[in-house]
Length: 256
Length: 339
Image (cartoon, rainbow over all chains, first blue to last red; front, side, top):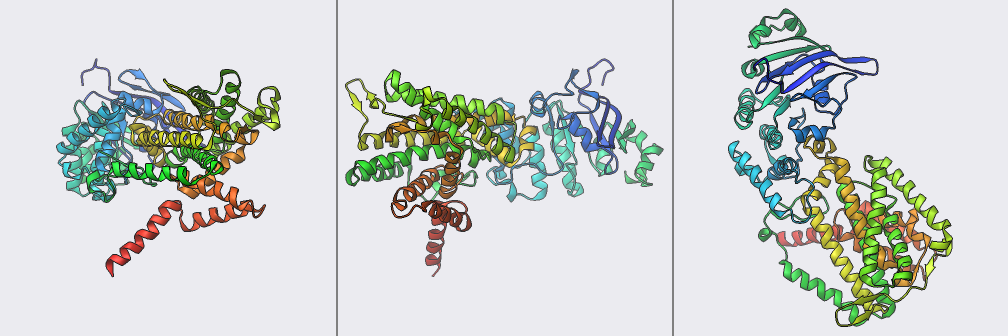
């Protein structure tokens, strides 16, 4: 990332409280173009809250969020998504009763601005189906297109979730524990899918599997009790005492 | 890829050729045939009654778009229907009752009321939607009830010019049972196919998505208020078209047509017929109005019968009468197949 380039995403002095509970205080972090940033920290550190603020599901009490240089602190979630700021959720959010293709097509139509079509939308529907099939083919899931998502294995469902977000052609993708509940191999495959299918993609990855985070991320940010206690390269974070302490003695170096 | 609204809002992912049912042309022919039967056997009164069932059924169908596919239970739906009925009745007195003009007035009024309703309710769901739609509906009722010079107040309006269809060759008066029945039939079919195309188009899939998972739809870049507003407008247009014909069946429109109890009646019809099935709207309307018309000649307590049917439907056939009977017969067939 060059020093002059506009960061893909800039979070500046963000704070959020729920009632008397301070969930985030003064968090600042930037995501460079094409960068993969890991976001780690114990449960309740505020990782998902930060995602909710970045994606517009929450409005911060203080601070601002800039997407490609533009202030989006108060923009609505769907507006951010259409601009290319896309997220996944901890729980799979695909429509289980819809087919895999329909799920992807729903995203592709939204991306193409055809999500509200009625009459004469046949072409748009075909184009979205085609885009869905292409993504599925590239993820080697083409033979699953007709199945309802509920009929897939858990690992495949998580991949479909990621494919749905990729169908939005994001510029910035926030992945909230995409590998939770997956085996090491499945988790690595999922990350591989994101890396190969997401073109010019900047990502923030929340994951508890530190091997994956340290293995794929360019930098890693550590949140603890709503504070950003470190943001550095994986090697530096492994050696960072505060980060280690946040994980209650679990040696980050050993985990890797 | 084809898909069909089957009551659960699920998409039929199998290709049409694999479905075990009659081809489309045979189905249409069968429907047309059964629609022609009343013309042979029913008298003027019965045909008017069937026209009323089809017209109210069309309004219920438009409600199904909101309830069945959007999860939006509205107690203000009578405004779209009754408002359009009043607008058509009032317009007929000055413009004459050309059916095309009446339909245009009704659709415009239905959509305008939907827009008004949408501005108030499109950001709300569930109970808030229900209450807000009820309030908007009752405001309209108050206006209709007290604006005597225009709406006739509590007496309503009666005595309209004869509904006419102008063709290139001749002007056909639609003032008898046969003509009204046929007009209502065309309305019902057009409304059904309009609603079905809505449900199967991207907008319909998006509407289903907002019913199932609002958060996900936002995360996919969909504006939920926009989807709801479009559903309301489509629903309002269909309800408005139905409302436009309503005054001409009984030559009367009164404030009850916009009252919240009318909306509640439509919900009851919808539940009896089957929420999310589209065609169930007509079945529910037929059962309700059938009870109202024929049971009420034996007892004043006909609403008790409606209540019983409603409770039994909810308990035994929660997907509606048609789906319930289908399931029951399907099971018997399967049992026979095994033995």
